[in-house]
Each structure stands twice: as C-alpha cells, then as structure tokens.
Image: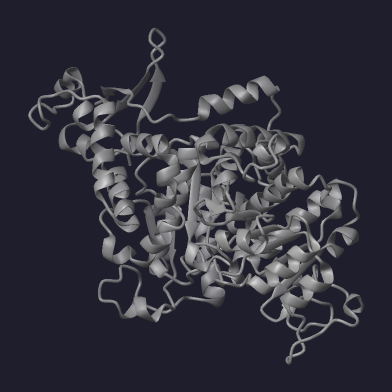
Length: 571
C-alpha cells in the first residue's frame, strides 16, 4: 500500500507530491510515472539516471507520440487495449490524452466498446487493476482490502459480473465495468484516480462458455446463490465499512433479482447507490425535461411508456413519479401516467407473478376495457401505443429492434414531436437505431440513445444524436457526495442531479439542438451536478451545512487535473 502526500507550493501554486518510491519501482507505478518528462533533478533524486533516454520531454510531446500510436490502431477493441495499456503505465498521460480527445475516446474506454472488452477480458488481460474478492476467500476480506494500492479511498465501484450491460453473465470479465466507470469518475468528475478502487466480487459464473474456456481467469464454478451469496455480500459490506467508513460505494451490473434488494438492504447503512437503477433514472428524466424544452409542454401532461420492467425501468419510473409529484401531481395521478411493458406485455393489476416494485406500476385492469390482446391474452406494446398515445417511449430491454417501424410510426401518428429513448447498450442491444427513428418519424423524433450513434442526415438536415448515458450523472453525484461528506445518497439527490443536467441542456436556447450537451462540456456539467447534489444532501440533513461559496470552494479544491506534479522523495 502506497502512502503519498500532496501539498501546494505557495510560491508557484504547483502541486508537490512526496512519494516513498524510486528507480524502477517509481517507473512501474502509473500514478506517479512521468516517463521521459521526469526532470534532470527528479532523475537524480529518484535514481532514474540511465533508466530513461537523455531527452527531457514535455507532456505535449508525449501526447503527440501517444495520439499517433492511437491512430495507428484500426479496430475499436485494439484502441481500447491501447488506451488501457497507457493507463497502466502513466495515469496522468492517459487522462490528459482522453480529456483532449474525449468525444473520440470516451466510447472506447466505456460503452459500447467496454462490452466487447469484458467479453474478451481473460484473453486481453495485461495487468492487475483493482481488487478481486472471491467467495472462497470470504474469510480474508479484511486482509485483501489491505492489499489495495493506495491507503485513502473515496469511491468504490463493485460488480459481481452477472448482468454486464445487455450481455448477461460474463463472470470475471465484468471487472471491466468498475475499471471503466472509475475512469469516468476521474475524467468527468475530477476525482483523484488514486482515491478510487474497482472491486470484483467473484461468486462464480453460470456462463458455460466461460467455464469451458481454458484461459478463463475467474473462479471455475457455477454461481453461489441464496443465503451463501447474501452472507458473502454482507461480509464484503462489513469489511468495506471497517476499512473505509466514509467511502461512496456504487453497485454496478448486478442481476435483476439482486440489484434492487441489495440497494434497499444497504442504502441506509452506507453512502451507496446503484447506477443502473438510480443513475439511469436521473439521466432519463433529464432527457425528458430537455425534450419538454422543445415541445413546450409540462411533465405532468406526459404519457410515458417504459419498455422493460426490470431494475432500470422501475428506477426510471420512480424518478419520473417523484418529479411529477414535486410538480403537483398526487402519487396516484403520477403512476397513472406511467405505463410499464414487460416480457408479457403491459403490467396490469390482474397479472400474476409481479414483484412488489412492479405491482406499484401495474395499471388498473378496468382502464384497458376494449383493448385488443394477443393470442396469449397479453396487452402488447403495439396496442399500448395505439391506446395510450404516449409522448415519451423509453427502452431498457436489451432487445435489439424492439422499437419496430410499425410501433414508431404508430406513436408518431398521434404525437407531433415523439421523444424516443432506446437506452440499452452496447449498440448491438439498442431497441432501435437513430437513423431509423429519424427516418420513420420524418425527422420529428427527439432521440437520445444509451449508446453513441453518428449524426443522421435526412432531407438536407443533420441531426446530432444525444447519448443518454449515465456518464452525465454519476461522476457529478459522486463528486458532490464526496465533497460535502454525505452520509447517504437519496432519491432527492438524484432528482436534483437530473434537474441540474436538464438546466445545462442546449434545448433551453435552441429547439433544434441535441437533447444533451456535448461530451466536451462534461466537466462543467459534472461540477454543476456536484453542487446541486451536495446542496440537496445538506438540505436533507445528510451532510454538515456550509455556505454556498464554501461548497463551491470545496468542489473546486477536490477536483483533480491531469498534469504532472513536482515529485519529492520521502524515505
């Protein structure tokens, strides 16, 4: 475990970091490795003379070299591997390169390319990053957490790999998600990379292809389930609470039977949230609010169909309901405007097998009198579209092509500017492509997608497609929670984040603009979300109060910038 200390030179304003490393150990520590940019003095002090070429370079020279190497890679997965290898050698240079080319590179370090990287994790594995905690080692979790690379940790992202994006159980390959998410915490939110920790909980896998692969790197047994799994999670949570009593813990890509119940179990014990449930909900609500800037209508007047009644769909419903109630509707009135469609059609009060969360949004059966049913007696998405005439259609199914031309055209017949959000990722799992949605609606659709899509040219117009990605929300929420030292993360904090994001959307001033700001502006957006989140935490009594000016000062002081500090040697 590396202990380091950062101070500021009052004369120059320069960051000064004292580290207990030298020689090859320093060069092999990516957080502090400067490569050819080590100064002559640093080379002498740290025993680097002769270990580097004579030329003392600048970060600009290094960026030119690394960007040239990046351009030489021809496939997205090769570019992903190249960037991850750079991160494993030199963290500052990695973040500066991606920051300078964020529009080009963010999809390579996260969705959609991270999905392919997770699928091939055991074959492209190069170097350890984060901690792997296996069920077999459950009695040693305190000791394993002590093996972390840096002492102070502000944010943990954890997964068990059972539901990676829309790809299913990828076992140990799921580690690519916490690594990618935490890269975005730093890139977009400015959280110091040494204060983040990716964790994979290895409870096995039911992916038979992975278990049969001789190169698979995870535990080779089927998933541990039931009370044994719950005990494993409880042991993990207790170990985290002992090691990091003030940490922010983010649950990521847990399967539907576990995601919400783990959140409910631990949300009042830890400063914690589930990004698939709450982050997705906040960014979807922000997309709706941005679309309302174009249509000039009120949230309380919308009829919203959500296809996919799992954790993400329920989370989106909860967030929209809270926003509608905040604008004056009763809970019953808000629920009446939310239509959830699952694998067996519209959720309604006579449907068997619904979870308690789904039952909250099951529509009263008497509202569907006279509706047509399919040969299994289900109320189909097509029938819901015809009867409800929704203004907003959201997909969280992971089923490509779910939004067919017939369904989209039926919606567009009833609504002048239909808002359609196929949120599933990676791109191969999207409910529709952007070009189809624009074409089928004659250019009238307001589109935001979970995965990136290229601009669409249609009848002489160019439509920029907004990416409705959680990256707009969770880095800012994390930064805000850390800055104000929030003791919990609540739904109202996510509601505040959604409204802060909506306030930054370009549709406020230009109805022809995409629904979200460009990713090049993500850092100021994350800052605004951090302030809104922290203020809400203080308003709820979940953080010690400060003046707004003091809070802004804390946020700006917390944010890390990718630049080389001056290093000094601490024996």
